[in-house]
Length: 53
Image (cartoon, rainbow, N blue to C red):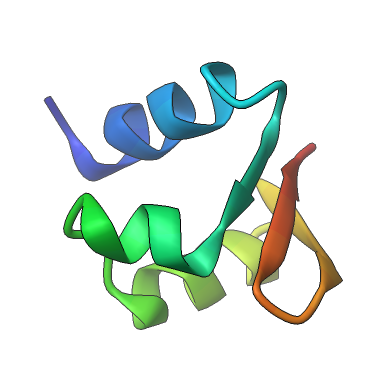
């Protein structure tokens, strides 16, 4: 499973919302989270909370 697929699965099971902690616990690095935000794949709702776009 690719990192992208893993992140998508994290969001899918949480109604398209995920926290930094949830992603870190599954091995997703903060730099990859930042890359997803910059690419408009996810958006930051508030500190540590993201929504799938």
